[in-house]
Structure formats: C-alpha cells, structure tokens
Length: 264
Image 1 (cartoon, rainbow, N blue to C red):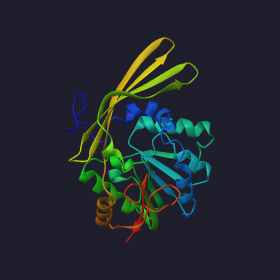
Image 2: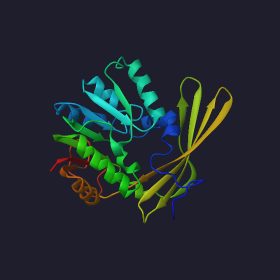
Image 3: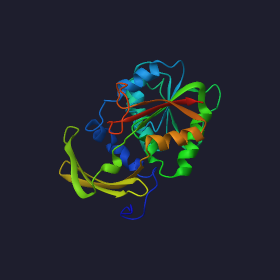
Image 4: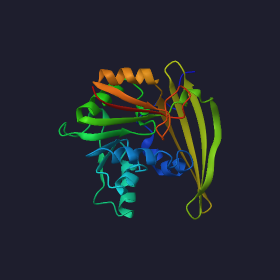
C-alpha cells in the first residue's frame, strides 16, 4: 500500500512543528526516560562537546546539561526549540543551554576541533526518508565529528512490523490540571520503500471546549547492514552495535538498535 496522507505525502521533516505541543505528553507515556542513562553515561566518557541531532523539546538535552555535559542541540523545528528553551530556563540551565535552529543535512558548525560526540537518539535519522538526505546528513556529521569522536545512532527497529489501522485511539489521559488529550492514530505502510506513516489527530479538551489538531509523521527504516554501508560511504566505521540501553549484544529481534561509529 502506498503511503499517502490526507492531502499529499509529507517529507520526513514535516509535521514536527505541529507535534511540538504534544511531544512531551506522548513520550512520557511511551519511551519515557528509559534511554536517558545510556546517553548521559556515553556523553560522560567523552572529553569535549556533544552535539544532539534533532534535540526537539529537550527530552534528552536537559538531563545531559544537568550532568554537566557541554551540549549543543540542533533542530529544524522552531516550535520544538522554543519549548526546549523554556524548559531550560525553568530548570536554571538557560545560561548553559545552546539550542540552534539548523538543517542537519548541512550542520552550521566548524569542522575543527569538532564534537567529541554526535548523538542521533530515538530514531531521529529515520525521519530522513530519502537516500540523498541521509547521505548529506552523514557527510555533515563526519565533517563536524572530532577525529577521535563517537557518533551514536539509536534506531527504532519495529516500525515496518506495525499493523496498519485506521483512526484507533492509542493514548488518552489528563494534561495539566483541567485538560485532557486523546490521540487518534492511523498507521499506513509502504513496505517496498520501508516507509511508515502516522496520521495523528490530537483531541484536546479543556474547560468544556474541544480542539482537534491533525498532522502526519513519516519514518523510514534501514537494517543494520544497510546503515553500516551508508556510514562507510561517509567515511565512518561502525565500532559497536548494541541491542539494548544496558550495552547488551545486538540481535535481529533486539528491542533497540544502537550503533556507535567513528572515523575510519
């Protein structure tokens, strides 16, 4: 089945401005904080600055900043970054937080001395739905990564396995003191191109009023060998592949696919 949205097929970067208002609410109920310790521990072992691709609302950025990491977050979505800055201010981290609006296909940073770690957490690279965009991003990462730096990639492996369904309520719960959110979701697959499309409808109820917010998110899935090949084309070599956030070995049915790479 070809992936289509209600109007036209989105690109991977589309939908995230609209998603910003609901991102933290949804992720608190799904991934939560289960990957935070992994990234903070990995960053702690690096001697220098860390760059987070697709930092969003700061779900990982703020815990890393609290740990003392010299972190720079980059994201294309102004709405996501606005929320990250507000959260950093509330946490007393505004002076240390550096959030940059930019395109990861052409990172706006100097090549030298480079970042000691670049992180692409929680399927971030899977929003790059074309070969050209992925190749440009990996080349850009290779350019700004320190010659002894680590590039960490977290892939969500099960997207192609999702059953297609239409207008299913997948999450529902309170939001704030007198609000309520319901997520009604449609999932469609283009298995030939390994694309998964989520049509999202958030139904927001507050004070007797109801508002509906609709947008689509598109993701692509590559296997570990496929991603390894693309990293090598960018001059990066895979150093380790993990199957969980505790450093366990990778296998085909692993819950997560984490790749650690560096310059060849």
